[in-house]
Image 1 (tube, rainbow, N blue to C red):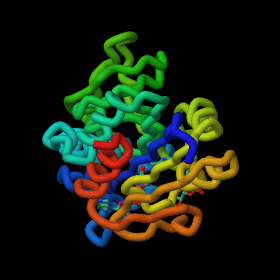
Image 2: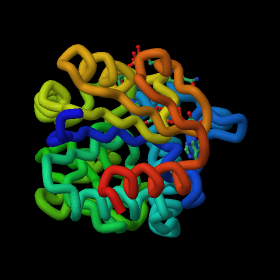
Image 3: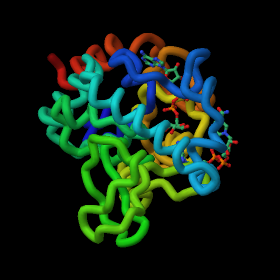
Length: 233
Ligand code: NAD
Ligand code: APR
């Protein structure tokens, strides 16, 4: 087999589940007690900004209380020790990849600990509430919203991501249900350019048939095993 030089890893809520952060589509998932249309669309924010700010205030609090697990740590080790090009693309809004030590992470759905000013376009690291209408530290306007990509909005960094998918020898999907595009289509994109595709998930994802190999189990076990295999240790 040719040496693997370029890897793209896509992560979803499942990789942070064992850190205590709820996934979206599980029986007790976030979309069970919140309507997507209300809390994760620009229209919902327009109708009831308080409800949306409260929802993301809670996400922020939970992110700050969570710790990276063995899966985040294994990917950080891979990022450090893999000699080729590695890109972690995450749909997650938590910062657990970074806190584990990973350097090359793209947040395609935004970041929970970031606030975006609709008046001046500045972004600021944000760890407190957005509910009481704090002014933007850059322009002073009260126009901050969560820096989250909502349904109906363009995910971030798509040019870079598609560039990396086109060069990938290996595409690995971890802890995502494959329910939301464009992330759900990355496996086909990578494969159309010749990549091998591996899925690590608790259960088969919706796009499971596209993968060359699927390993089922908790990310905290599967990811360290796979990283050890890849690094040959
Ligand atoms: P889609 O899956 O075809 O596309 C969603 C787009 O929005 C993608 O580009 C995606 O990357 C982006 N996006 C925006 N906010 C996001 C977020 N918070 N998380 C993930 N991706 C996000 O969906 P669509 O055609 O835009 O339809 C969305 C509608 O689908 C929603 O309004 C909702 O009614 C429904 N939906 C329901 C559930 C559920 O579990 N009940 C889940 C997802 C979507
Ligand atoms: N280890 C591995 N996989 C797990 C674990 C675990 N410990 N726990 C759950 N999973 C798997 C589930 O089986 C499921 O397939 O993780 C997946 C999580 O799927 P979703 O809840 O749909 O989350 P995700 O795929 O990240 O959602 C995509 O939808 O609404 C948006 O903003 C949201 O970015 C998110 C996007």
